[in-house]
Length: 131
Image 1: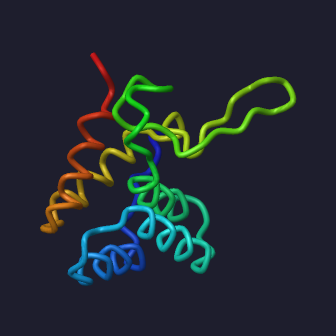
Image 2: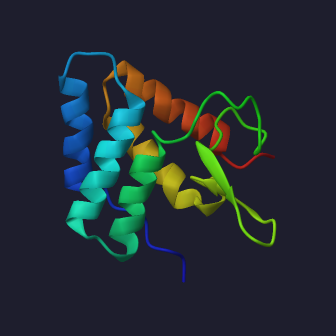
């Protein structure tokens, strides 16, 4: 059975709308923090929790890694190495699947703010499966 699609969570919509409504340049780091705070406050579980996480991850990926470690424009904001030497990236795009791309496509279809449109377009372009 395929995984159910990620729903758009209204509280996450509100966080995005509030950031857009400030009229100031969009601060993706502040937005990501607000989205993660909202996700924690909602105490979501299952698919709703993953949907809210994917929404926040859209703004939590760094753009200054120039290909490392995923050979993409986007990279993690940090990493941890466990006692076995295994590196865990934060966030880790390996946790994303087609449902994340579908969610960002939904956001792109309804968003009119240029900074958000650009971010979602870049995410879809860079993180879509490579042929």
